[in-house]
Amino acid sequence: MTITKIKEPFFHVTGERGWINDPNGLIYYKGQYHAFFQYYPNDTKWGPMHWGHVVSDDLTNWKYLPVALAPGDECDKNGCFSGSAIVHGGKLWLMYTGFIENEGGESIRQIQCLAESDDGVTFKKHGVVIGEDLLPDGYAPCDFRDPKVWLHDGYFWCITAARKIEGRGRILLFKSKDLFNWEFVNDLFGKDSAGTMIECPDYNEELGYLLFCEQFQPSENKEHLNVHTCRWCVGRIDYSTGTFKEETRGIVDYGFDMYAPQTFAGKPVFMGWLNMWDRNVPSAKYGFAGMLTVPRRVLVENGRLCQEPVVNCGEVYKATVSDRLEDKVTKGVITVKATNLEGFELKMRSNGDNYTSFVLCDGEWVFDRSKSGEAIVGVEKDEDSLKGIRRMPYSNEQEATITIVMDEFSVEIFEGGRALSSTIYPPFDANRLELTVKAAACEYARADITLNK
Ligand code: FRU
Image 1 (cartoon, rainbow, N blue to C red):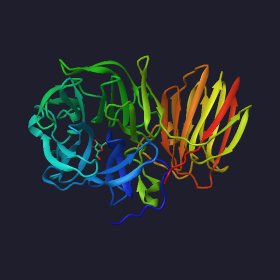
Image 2 (cartoon, helix red, strand yellow):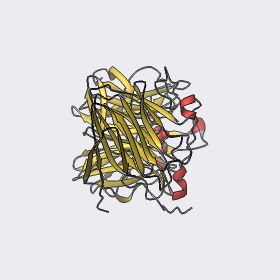
Image 3 (cartoon, rainbow, N blue to C red):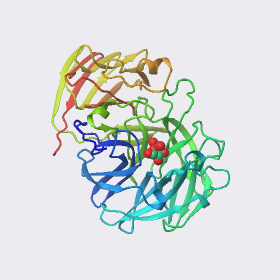
Image 4 (spheres, helix red, strand yellow):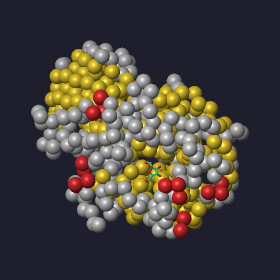
Protein backbone atom coordinates (compact mmCIF):
# COMPACT_ATOMS: atom_id res chain seq x y z
CA MET A 1 0.00 0.00 0.00
CA THR A 2 1.33 3.47 -0.83
CA ILE A 3 0.36 6.27 1.48
CA THR A 4 0.55 9.94 0.61
CA LYS A 5 0.46 12.58 3.31
CA ILE A 6 -1.80 15.44 2.22
CA LYS A 7 -1.92 17.38 5.48
CA GLU A 8 0.26 17.42 8.55
CA PRO A 9 0.85 19.28 11.78
CA PHE A 10 2.86 22.48 11.35
CA PHE A 11 5.68 21.87 13.82
CA HIS A 12 4.97 18.52 15.50
CA VAL A 13 6.93 15.52 14.27
CA THR A 14 4.98 12.96 12.23
CA GLY A 15 6.18 10.23 9.92
CA GLU A 16 6.95 11.12 6.32
CA ARG A 17 3.74 9.19 5.78
CA GLY A 18 1.76 6.48 7.56
CA TRP A 19 1.80 5.49 11.20
CA ILE A 20 4.06 6.46 14.10
CA ASN A 21 4.03 5.73 17.82
CA ASP A 22 6.69 5.99 20.56
CA PRO A 23 9.69 8.32 20.34
CA ASN A 24 12.89 6.25 20.40
CA GLY A 25 16.63 6.88 20.73
CA LEU A 26 16.37 10.58 21.67
CA ILE A 27 19.91 11.93 21.71
CA TYR A 28 22.23 14.82 20.89
CA TYR A 29 24.96 13.59 18.53
CA LYS A 30 27.50 15.45 16.42
CA GLY A 31 25.82 18.84 16.88
CA GLN A 32 22.21 17.81 16.24
CA TYR A 33 19.24 16.47 18.14
CA HIS A 34 18.16 13.09 16.82
CA ALA A 35 14.68 11.69 17.35
CA PHE A 36 13.70 8.26 16.13
CA PHE A 37 10.20 6.86 16.37
CA GLN A 38 8.19 3.69 15.88
CA TYR A 39 7.19 3.88 12.25
CA TYR A 40 5.12 1.97 9.71
CA PRO A 41 5.26 3.85 6.40
CA ASN A 42 2.94 1.55 4.45
CA ASP A 43 -0.30 2.12 6.31
CA THR A 44 -1.96 4.50 8.76
CA LYS A 45 -2.28 1.60 11.21
CA TRP A 46 0.39 -0.05 13.36
CA GLY A 47 2.36 -2.64 11.36
CA PRO A 48 5.88 -4.13 11.14
CA MET A 49 7.84 -1.55 13.10
CA HIS A 50 10.69 0.46 11.61
CA TRP A 51 12.66 3.28 13.24
CA GLY A 52 11.84 6.57 11.48
CA HIS A 53 14.40 9.31 11.98
CA VAL A 54 14.41 13.13 12.19
CA VAL A 55 17.10 15.63 13.20
CA SER A 56 16.97 19.19 14.49
CA ASP A 57 19.30 22.03 15.47
CA ASP A 58 16.79 23.77 17.72
CA LEU A 59 14.21 21.16 18.79
CA THR A 60 11.56 22.93 16.67
CA ASN A 61 12.65 22.60 13.01
CA TRP A 62 12.89 18.88 12.20
CA LYS A 63 14.22 17.29 9.04
CA TYR A 64 13.66 13.73 7.86
CA LEU A 65 16.55 11.32 7.48
CA PRO A 66 16.23 7.86 5.92
CA VAL A 67 14.65 5.08 7.99
CA ALA A 68 17.31 4.02 10.52
CA LEU A 69 16.18 0.46 11.23
CA ALA A 70 13.94 -1.80 9.20
CA PRO A 71 12.76 -5.24 10.33
CA GLY A 72 13.62 -8.46 8.54
CA ASP A 73 16.82 -9.84 10.05
CA GLU A 74 16.84 -12.99 12.12
CA CYS A 75 16.82 -11.01 15.41
CA ASP A 76 14.08 -8.55 14.39
CA LYS A 77 12.15 -10.58 11.84
CA ASN A 78 8.80 -8.92 12.46
CA GLY A 79 9.65 -5.55 13.93
CA CYS A 80 12.20 -3.19 15.44
CA PHE A 81 10.40 -2.16 18.63
CA SER A 82 11.17 0.74 20.95
CA GLY A 83 14.53 1.47 22.48
CA SER A 84 17.10 4.16 23.18
CA ALA A 85 20.47 5.56 22.12
CA ILE A 86 23.87 6.28 23.61
CA VAL A 87 27.07 7.85 22.33
CA HIS A 88 30.17 5.74 22.99
CA GLY A 89 33.60 5.91 21.41
CA GLY A 90 32.40 8.68 19.10
CA LYS A 91 29.70 6.40 17.65
CA LEU A 92 25.96 6.42 18.00
CA TRP A 93 24.58 3.14 19.39
CA LEU A 94 20.93 2.10 19.34
CA MET A 95 19.48 -0.53 21.65
CA TYR A 96 16.09 -1.75 20.53
CA THR A 97 13.78 -4.72 20.81
CA GLY A 98 13.75 -7.34 18.10
CA PHE A 99 10.22 -8.67 17.69
CA ILE A 100 9.78 -12.24 16.48
CA GLU A 101 6.14 -13.10 16.11
CA ASN A 102 6.28 -16.89 15.66
CA GLU A 103 2.68 -18.13 16.09
CA GLY A 104 1.70 -15.14 18.25
CA GLY A 105 0.66 -15.11 21.94
CA GLU A 106 3.06 -16.91 24.25
CA SER A 107 5.28 -18.00 21.35
CA ILE A 108 6.26 -14.37 20.60
CA ARG A 109 9.88 -13.57 21.41
CA GLN A 110 11.20 -10.11 22.29
CA ILE A 111 14.97 -9.67 22.58
CA GLN A 112 17.26 -6.68 22.96
CA CYS A 113 19.43 -5.85 19.95
CA LEU A 114 22.24 -3.41 19.17
CA ALA A 115 23.06 -1.26 16.14
CA GLU A 116 25.82 1.30 15.56
CA SER A 117 26.53 4.27 13.34
CA ASP A 118 29.47 6.60 12.91
CA ASP A 119 27.62 9.20 10.87
CA GLY A 120 24.24 9.23 12.65
CA VAL A 121 22.50 8.37 9.38
CA THR A 122 23.18 4.74 8.45
CA PHE A 123 23.17 1.97 11.02
CA LYS A 124 24.85 -1.41 11.14
CA LYS A 125 23.00 -4.06 13.12
CA HIS A 126 24.92 -6.29 15.56
CA GLY A 127 22.02 -8.61 16.43
CA VAL A 128 20.87 -9.75 19.86
CA VAL A 129 22.80 -8.70 22.99
CA ILE A 130 20.22 -9.43 25.71
CA GLY A 131 18.42 -12.60 24.73
CA GLU A 132 15.94 -14.91 26.38
CA ASP A 133 18.83 -16.64 28.20
CA LEU A 134 19.40 -13.51 30.33
CA LEU A 135 15.77 -13.28 31.35
CA PRO A 136 15.44 -14.69 34.87
CA ASP A 137 13.15 -17.66 35.52
CA GLY A 138 9.48 -16.85 35.84
CA TYR A 139 9.46 -13.87 33.44
CA ALA A 140 7.56 -14.01 30.12
CA PRO A 141 9.86 -14.00 27.05
CA CYS A 142 6.95 -12.70 24.96
CA ASP A 143 6.78 -9.43 26.94
CA PHE A 144 10.37 -8.24 27.32
CA ARG A 145 11.10 -4.95 25.60
CA ASP A 146 11.97 -1.25 25.31
CA PRO A 147 15.60 -1.03 26.56
CA LYS A 148 16.73 2.34 27.94
CA VAL A 149 20.51 2.53 28.23
CA TRP A 150 22.85 4.94 30.09
CA LEU A 151 26.36 5.07 31.50
CA HIS A 152 27.15 5.27 35.22
CA ASP A 153 30.37 4.61 37.06
CA GLY A 154 32.14 2.76 34.27
CA TYR A 155 29.18 0.49 33.41
CA PHE A 156 26.42 0.67 30.88
CA TRP A 157 23.07 0.13 32.57
CA CYS A 158 19.86 -0.80 30.87
CA ILE A 159 16.29 -1.12 32.06
CA THR A 160 13.66 -3.04 30.13
CA ALA A 161 9.97 -3.61 30.48
CA ALA A 162 9.04 -7.15 31.45
CA ARG A 163 6.24 -9.22 32.91
CA LYS A 164 6.02 -12.12 35.34
CA ILE A 165 4.39 -15.19 33.81
CA GLU A 166 0.78 -14.96 35.05
CA GLY A 167 1.75 -11.66 36.66
CA ARG A 168 1.85 -7.99 35.81
CA GLY A 169 4.40 -5.43 34.63
CA ARG A 170 7.97 -5.30 35.96
CA ILE A 171 11.15 -3.33 35.18
CA LEU A 172 14.43 -5.26 34.93
CA LEU A 173 17.95 -3.85 35.33
CA PHE A 174 20.98 -5.16 33.41
CA LYS A 175 24.61 -4.02 33.26
CA SER A 176 27.50 -4.31 30.84
CA LYS A 177 31.08 -3.16 30.37
CA ASP A 178 30.92 -2.93 26.59
CA LEU A 179 27.27 -2.82 25.34
CA PHE A 180 27.67 -6.35 23.91
CA ASN A 181 27.95 -8.58 27.01
CA TRP A 182 25.22 -8.02 29.56
CA GLU A 183 24.29 -9.51 32.91
CA PHE A 184 21.01 -9.39 34.78
CA VAL A 185 21.14 -7.30 37.98
CA ASN A 186 17.69 -7.14 39.54
CA ASP A 187 13.96 -6.51 39.26
CA LEU A 188 13.82 -2.79 40.16
CA PHE A 189 10.64 -2.82 42.24
CA GLY A 190 10.49 -6.54 42.95
CA LYS A 191 6.71 -6.53 42.81
CA ASP A 192 3.90 -6.34 40.26
CA SER A 193 2.89 -2.96 38.90
CA ALA A 194 -0.71 -1.78 38.68
CA GLY A 195 -0.71 -2.18 34.91
CA THR A 196 -0.98 -5.57 33.22
CA MET A 197 2.26 -4.71 31.43
CA ILE A 198 4.80 -1.93 31.81
CA GLU A 199 6.10 -0.28 28.64
CA CYS A 200 8.93 2.12 27.80
CA PRO A 201 10.68 2.58 31.15
CA ASP A 202 12.95 5.64 31.14
CA TYR A 203 15.49 6.64 33.79
CA ASN A 204 17.21 9.99 34.17
CA GLU A 205 20.31 9.62 36.28
CA GLU A 206 21.08 13.35 36.52
CA LEU A 207 17.75 14.50 37.97
CA GLY A 208 16.76 11.21 39.56
CA TYR A 209 13.45 10.14 38.07
CA LEU A 210 11.87 7.18 36.38
CA LEU A 211 9.08 7.31 33.79
CA PHE A 212 7.06 4.30 32.71
CA CYS A 213 3.76 3.46 31.06
CA GLU A 214 1.25 1.02 32.41
CA GLN A 215 -1.28 -0.80 30.29
CA PHE A 216 -4.81 -1.47 31.47
CA GLN A 217 -4.17 0.18 34.78
CA PRO A 218 -7.16 0.57 37.09
CA SER A 219 -7.65 4.16 38.18
CA GLU A 220 -7.53 4.85 41.90
CA ASN A 221 -9.62 7.84 43.00
CA LYS A 222 -10.00 8.98 39.39
CA GLU A 223 -6.30 9.85 39.50
CA HIS A 224 -6.15 9.13 35.80
CA LEU A 225 -8.84 8.08 33.37
CA ASN A 226 -6.84 6.79 30.40
CA VAL A 227 -6.66 3.02 30.66
CA HIS A 228 -3.06 3.18 29.46
CA THR A 229 -1.15 5.90 31.22
CA CYS A 230 2.31 7.12 32.19
CA ARG A 231 3.74 7.68 35.62
CA TRP A 232 6.75 9.49 36.96
CA CYS A 233 8.56 8.39 40.09
CA VAL A 234 11.10 10.71 41.65
CA GLY A 235 13.89 8.68 43.25
CA ARG A 236 17.15 6.96 42.41
CA ILE A 237 18.46 3.56 41.53
CA ASP A 238 20.65 2.08 44.24
CA TYR A 239 23.27 0.41 42.05
CA SER A 240 24.59 -1.75 44.88
CA THR A 241 21.27 -3.59 45.20
CA GLY A 242 19.67 -2.85 41.83
CA THR A 243 16.55 -1.42 43.45
CA PHE A 244 14.71 1.83 42.88
CA LYS A 245 14.38 4.03 45.97
CA GLU A 246 11.14 5.81 45.29
CA GLU A 247 10.33 9.12 46.95
CA THR A 248 7.19 10.37 45.23
CA ARG A 249 5.08 9.49 42.19
CA GLY A 250 2.52 11.10 39.92
CA ILE A 251 0.92 11.18 36.49
CA VAL A 252 2.99 12.51 33.57
CA ASP A 253 0.10 14.03 31.60
CA TYR A 254 -3.55 14.70 32.42
CA GLY A 255 -4.82 14.82 28.83
CA PHE A 256 -6.24 12.19 26.52
CA ASP A 257 -3.20 11.66 24.36
CA MET A 258 0.29 11.19 25.71
CA TYR A 259 2.21 7.95 25.96
CA ALA A 260 5.71 6.50 25.97
CA PRO A 261 7.70 9.60 27.01
CA GLN A 262 11.46 9.27 26.66
CA THR A 263 14.19 11.58 27.97
CA PHE A 264 17.05 12.68 25.70
CA ALA A 265 20.25 10.88 26.73
CA GLY A 266 21.92 13.06 29.39
CA LYS A 267 19.60 16.05 28.90
CA PRO A 268 16.56 16.97 31.00
CA VAL A 269 14.19 17.12 28.02
CA PHE A 270 11.66 14.50 27.00
CA MET A 271 9.21 13.88 24.17
CA GLY A 272 6.20 11.58 24.15
CA TRP A 273 3.80 10.12 21.64
CA LEU A 274 0.94 12.64 21.27
CA ASN A 275 -1.61 9.90 20.87
CA MET A 276 -2.99 6.88 22.66
CA TRP A 277 -3.59 3.20 22.04
CA ASP A 278 -7.10 1.95 21.37
CA ARG A 279 -8.51 5.10 19.79
CA ASN A 280 -9.52 5.94 16.24
CA VAL A 281 -7.18 8.43 14.55
CA PRO A 282 -9.20 10.79 12.31
CA SER A 283 -6.06 12.14 10.58
CA ALA A 284 -5.57 8.77 8.87
CA LYS A 285 -7.51 10.18 5.91
CA TYR A 286 -4.75 12.77 5.47
CA GLY A 287 -2.13 10.01 5.23
CA PHE A 288 -0.69 10.24 8.71
CA ALA A 289 -1.50 8.80 12.12
CA GLY A 290 0.40 9.79 15.23
CA MET A 291 2.82 12.56 16.13
CA LEU A 292 5.29 13.39 18.86
CA THR A 293 4.73 15.98 21.59
CA VAL A 294 6.88 19.07 21.60
CA PRO A 295 10.07 18.57 23.62
CA ARG A 296 9.54 19.33 27.30
CA ARG A 297 12.12 20.52 29.77
CA VAL A 298 11.93 18.55 33.01
CA LEU A 299 12.61 19.87 36.47
CA VAL A 300 12.28 18.11 39.78
CA GLU A 301 10.90 20.61 42.27
CA ASN A 302 9.98 19.71 45.84
CA GLY A 303 9.81 16.07 44.91
CA ARG A 304 7.54 16.72 41.95
CA LEU A 305 8.33 16.20 38.27
CA CYS A 306 7.52 19.46 36.47
CA GLN A 307 7.62 20.16 32.77
CA GLU A 308 7.53 23.13 30.41
CA PRO A 309 7.53 23.17 26.62
CA VAL A 310 10.67 23.87 24.60
CA VAL A 311 9.66 25.67 21.39
CA ASN A 312 11.76 28.08 19.38
CA CYS A 313 9.37 31.01 18.96
CA GLY A 314 9.42 33.98 16.60
CA GLU A 315 7.50 37.22 16.80
CA VAL A 316 5.32 37.86 19.84
CA TYR A 317 1.99 39.69 19.99
CA LYS A 318 1.09 40.96 23.48
CA ALA A 319 -2.09 42.34 25.04
CA THR A 320 -3.52 43.17 28.42
CA VAL A 321 -6.74 41.32 29.20
CA SER A 322 -9.22 43.39 31.17
CA ASP A 323 -11.86 40.71 31.20
CA ARG A 324 -12.27 39.38 27.66
CA LEU A 325 -10.01 38.97 24.67
CA GLU A 326 -10.42 37.56 21.15
CA ASP A 327 -7.64 36.54 18.83
CA LYS A 328 -7.22 34.54 15.62
CA VAL A 329 -4.83 31.67 15.99
CA THR A 330 -4.48 28.06 14.86
CA LYS A 331 -0.87 27.46 15.80
CA GLY A 332 1.73 28.99 18.06
CA VAL A 333 2.50 29.30 21.74
CA ILE A 334 0.01 31.21 23.87
CA THR A 335 0.95 32.38 27.33
CA VAL A 336 -1.47 33.85 29.83
CA LYS A 337 0.00 35.28 33.02
CA ALA A 338 -2.54 36.13 35.70
CA THR A 339 -2.33 37.50 39.21
CA ASN A 340 -4.89 36.25 41.73
CA LEU A 341 -6.80 34.26 39.16
CA GLU A 342 -10.44 33.66 40.05
CA GLY A 343 -12.05 32.83 36.75
CA PHE A 344 -10.67 31.52 33.46
CA GLU A 345 -12.64 30.38 30.42
CA LEU A 346 -10.83 29.71 27.20
CA LYS A 347 -12.25 28.55 23.89
CA MET A 348 -9.69 27.49 21.31
CA ARG A 349 -10.09 26.62 17.63
CA SER A 350 -13.60 28.04 17.63
CA ASN A 351 -15.89 28.78 14.72
CA GLY A 352 -18.95 29.17 16.92
CA ASP A 353 -20.26 25.62 16.59
CA ASN A 354 -16.94 23.90 17.18
CA TYR A 355 -14.45 24.74 19.90
CA THR A 356 -12.20 23.16 22.49
CA SER A 357 -12.43 24.61 25.99
CA PHE A 358 -10.18 24.89 29.01
CA VAL A 359 -11.87 26.29 32.09
CA LEU A 360 -11.04 26.82 35.75
CA CYS A 361 -13.98 25.26 37.54
CA ASP A 362 -14.33 24.69 41.31
CA GLY A 363 -10.58 24.94 41.78
CA GLU A 364 -9.54 22.55 39.03
CA TRP A 365 -8.85 22.76 35.30
CA VAL A 366 -11.44 21.19 33.04
CA PHE A 367 -10.59 20.47 29.42
CA ASP A 368 -13.43 19.63 27.04
CA ARG A 369 -13.00 18.41 23.48
CA SER A 370 -16.57 17.16 22.99
CA LYS A 371 -17.26 19.93 20.44
CA SER A 372 -13.76 20.16 19.02
CA GLY A 373 -14.59 18.60 15.66
CA GLU A 374 -14.25 15.01 14.49
CA ALA A 375 -15.04 12.49 17.22
CA ILE A 376 -12.29 10.47 18.81
CA VAL A 377 -13.55 7.30 20.42
CA GLY A 378 -11.59 5.29 22.96
CA VAL A 379 -12.17 2.27 25.18
CA GLU A 380 -12.66 4.33 28.36
CA LYS A 381 -16.25 4.11 29.57
CA ASP A 382 -16.29 6.51 32.54
CA GLU A 383 -18.51 9.59 32.44
CA ASP A 384 -15.74 12.15 31.82
CA SER A 385 -14.18 10.17 28.97
CA LEU A 386 -17.53 9.67 27.25
CA LYS A 387 -18.13 13.43 27.53
CA GLY A 388 -14.71 14.31 26.09
CA ILE A 389 -13.49 15.71 29.41
CA ARG A 390 -10.14 15.63 31.22
CA ARG A 391 -9.22 17.38 34.46
CA MET A 392 -5.97 18.68 35.92
CA PRO A 393 -5.18 20.08 39.38
CA TYR A 394 -4.73 23.88 39.56
CA SER A 395 -1.51 25.14 41.15
CA ASN A 396 -3.30 27.94 42.98
CA GLU A 397 -0.23 30.11 42.71
CA GLN A 398 -0.65 33.84 43.16
CA GLU A 399 1.06 34.36 39.80
CA ALA A 400 -0.28 31.67 37.46
CA THR A 401 1.16 31.04 34.01
CA ILE A 402 -0.87 29.03 31.54
CA THR A 403 1.00 28.02 28.39
CA ILE A 404 -0.72 26.47 25.40
CA VAL A 405 1.17 24.93 22.55
CA MET A 406 -1.32 24.83 19.70
CA ASP A 407 -0.93 23.13 16.34
CA GLU A 408 -3.31 22.09 13.57
CA PHE A 409 -4.29 18.81 15.30
CA SER A 410 -3.35 19.20 18.95
CA VAL A 411 -3.17 21.32 22.08
CA GLU A 412 -0.65 20.82 24.87
CA ILE A 413 -1.50 22.87 27.96
CA PHE A 414 0.91 23.56 30.84
CA GLU A 415 0.22 25.11 34.24
CA GLY A 416 2.16 24.85 37.50
CA GLY A 417 4.53 22.27 35.97
CA ARG A 418 1.68 19.93 35.00
CA ALA A 419 0.66 19.10 31.44
CA LEU A 420 -2.54 18.16 29.66
CA SER A 421 -2.15 17.04 26.04
CA SER A 422 -4.81 16.09 23.57
CA THR A 423 -5.32 15.68 19.88
CA ILE A 424 -8.21 17.57 18.30
CA TYR A 425 -9.48 17.48 14.73
CA PRO A 426 -11.33 20.79 14.28
CA PRO A 427 -12.64 22.21 11.00
CA PHE A 428 -9.87 24.16 9.27
CA ASP A 429 -11.85 27.42 9.55
CA ALA A 430 -12.06 27.14 13.35
CA ASN A 431 -9.40 29.73 14.15
CA ARG A 432 -10.87 31.92 16.90
CA LEU A 433 -9.59 32.09 20.43
CA GLU A 434 -11.88 33.57 23.10
CA LEU A 435 -10.58 34.21 26.58
CA THR A 436 -12.57 35.45 29.57
CA VAL A 437 -10.60 36.06 32.74
CA LYS A 438 -11.30 37.27 36.24
CA ALA A 439 -8.04 38.28 37.89
CA ALA A 440 -6.26 41.22 39.52
CA ALA A 441 -4.12 41.53 36.38
CA CYS A 442 -3.71 39.47 33.23
CA GLU A 443 -1.29 39.51 30.29
CA TYR A 444 -1.77 37.61 27.06
CA ALA A 445 1.05 36.76 24.64
CA ARG A 446 0.93 34.84 21.38
CA ALA A 447 4.23 33.73 19.91
CA ASP A 448 4.39 32.71 16.27
CA ILE A 449 6.47 29.84 15.09
CA THR A 450 8.32 30.41 11.87
CA LEU A 451 9.96 27.37 10.42
CA ASN A 452 12.82 27.52 7.99
CA LYS A 453 11.05 24.99 5.76
C1 FRU B 1 4.54 1.22 23.47
C2 FRU B 1 4.88 -0.02 22.67
C3 FRU B 1 6.21 -0.56 23.12
C4 FRU B 1 6.67 -1.33 21.92
C5 FRU B 1 6.16 -0.47 20.79
C6 FRU B 1 5.77 -1.24 19.57
O1 FRU B 1 3.66 2.10 22.84
O2 FRU B 1 3.83 -0.96 22.79
O3 FRU B 1 6.15 -1.34 24.30
O4 FRU B 1 8.05 -1.48 21.88
O5 FRU B 1 5.07 0.25 21.29
O6 FRU B 1 5.48 -0.39 18.53
